[in-house]
Amino acid sequence: MLCFAYGSNLDWEQMKKRCPSARYCGVAVLPDHRLAFTRRSKTRNCGVADALPEKGSDVWGVVYEIAEQDVGLLDKSEGYRPGRENNAYVRGERHVFMDGDKESPLAVMIYFALPEKNPPLPSKEYKEQILKGARFWHLPEDYIKNVIEPLEVS
Image 1: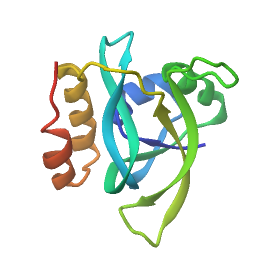
Image 2: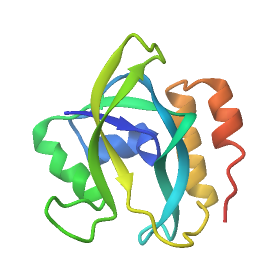
Image 3: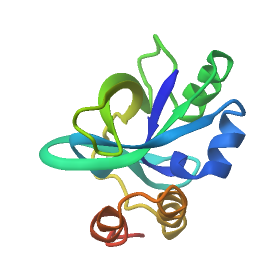
Image 4: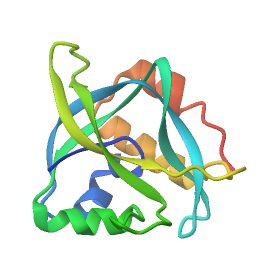
């Protein structure tokens, strides 16, 4: 399965722990979405990442290839169980563009949060984890400077 990561799963160390089979495929952009923090993580006790539809905005991240035996592990990490009513995230298919090239669409699975009312801000540690991954994978510098670095933290 190809999976697009845009939050803490940008952190390669975390991703390899969650999905030992994960293989980096490249940097990609999810068009017409913006990075938001719409849900409180019970384990992190802070707001966690989501990609909300917003015309003209982009969410940058990376595409991983994950073996079928690890998909359930990732679902569990994301708080998603197919068929369960109360999930933290849902998994959906979208098209991203490798290296931002609009001529190279790629169908991937993406986890979207089920938003909560008045979620907290992301913590400093959570933001740093996203920044670490964004820098490690060399996401566009303007995205890092204009979207990730200015995030308010709790």
